Image (cartoon, rainbow, N blue to C red; front, top):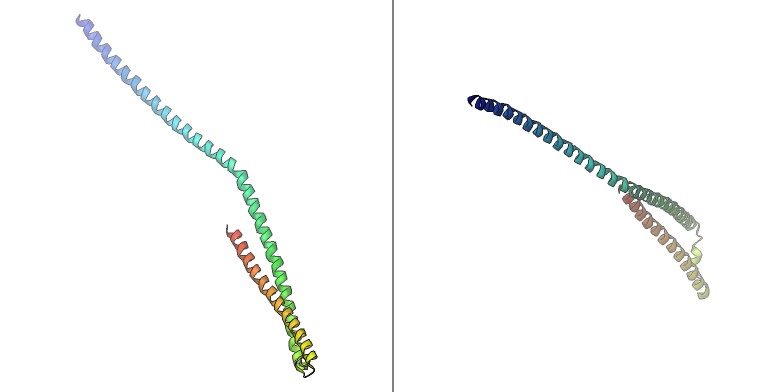
Length: 161
């Protein structure tokens, strides 16, 4: 009986060692499975993010093309406004040069020359037409400059966005 008991004790020692080995193997497998799950979870998150980005890419490309078209149109508008402002400035410069040259030659003196009241009225109306025309040209020029300034700001805003 003692023998059986000693054999049982030895079997308990062996079975305890085997149980420890089984438990450590299970713990190792569990740790490996946990790491694999974490890696798969990370891969899933990355894959999900890639899908989200690939869905957004066409919309972003379309938005980019739209913005580029708007910038291109604004640049064309600025160029056209610059040309128009230059034409207005040239026209005003010619008019001022003409007035300055005529001033020295006495060509405008007929406006103030004594004459009949009918002639004075006609001269006054003609002078009013000249002044009104010059005023309209100046207003157009100033308006063109304002519009040009606004378009440049708009273009600058598009460029920075």
